[in-house]
Length: 196
Image (cartoon, rainbow, N blue to C red; front, side):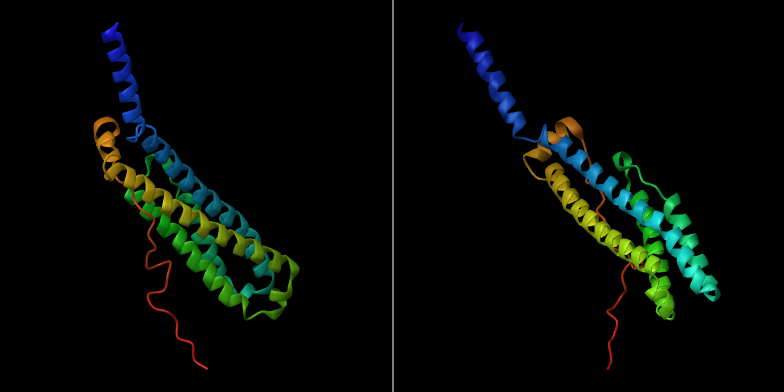
C-alpha cells in the first residue's frame, strides 16, 4: 500500500512538474505563432484584393501614368505569388514574403504620389472609399505584424529560457523562430527633410 501511494505521489508530482515546464505552453505558443502569421497573410491578401479596383479607378483619370499603374500591377502579382506556410516557415521564406509585400507597399506609395496630381480623382467617391479601405487594411497589417512580433518573442523565450528550454530540448527540439524584420525596401533609410 505504501508503494502504491508513493507511485501515485510521484506520478502526480511529475505531472505538476511537467505542466509547469512547458509541455503544454510550448506547443500552444507555436500554434499561436502560426495563427498570427496566418493573420498577416490574410491582411496582405485583403490589400491585394483591393488593388485591382483602385488601379481601375485611377486608370480612368490618369491614363498617362501607365508606368506607375503597371508597376502596381506587377508588384501585386509578385506579392500574391509569394505565399507562406505558417507551420513550416523558414527565415528565407519569411524574408522573401516580406520583400514581395514591401515591393507592393512601395508601388502603392508611388501610386498615391501620382494621385496628388489629379484633384478630380481625389474627389471621386469610389477612389475615396477604396483609399479608406486600403488605409484601414494597412493599419490592420501593422497591428497583425506587431502581434506576430510579440508572439514570436514569447515563443522564442519559451524555447530558450530555463526551465521551459529544458523541456523543449528533451521533448520538442524547436529552434528559435525567425522574427519579422523591416527591410530597407519598406522604410526610408533616413527621415525625409521638411522645409518651409
